[in-house]
Image (cartoon, rainbow, N blue to C red; front, top):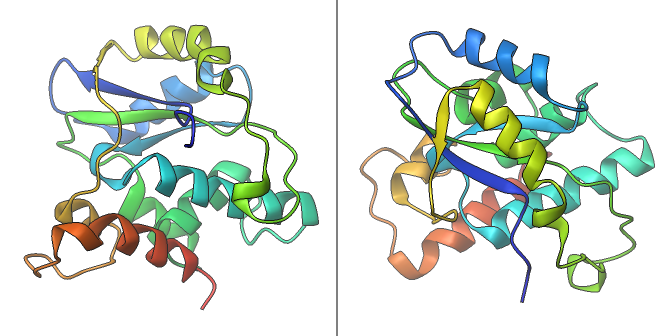
Length: 184
């Protein structure tokens, strides 16, 4: 079983009016460039986030990233696209969003398939203090929830048409499949 991905759900006091301001605040207070913010519904599940992270990390270590920044590469793969601007549009914070995920991309060595990677169980807890600090500077409150795959999330990342029926047992798989198509 996968440990929790280092992602913290937050809720803003009011809907986001200026996503750029939120991102600037995150960039100002993040301890390093491995922190990002995602729209709430685009985080499909623990398995989805770890799969996207694994692909990102492998590309990073091999020097094969499309994006110049590891967080942009993560957004690109999560969004299932080769285009950075489309990835930000799909997975990034938008005007009117009320919830988001503060995410840290750990620097764990990867060799082979995800199931063979040794992910320390403490990965989430190791970054909790920094996430709390960022959350406070964003003037948001922590949400006691973990990522859940939704059909609206699939539509947001471009993995389905808005209103398209997707069987509930297939939603998480569709998130993961969409991420794997980022370079096709």
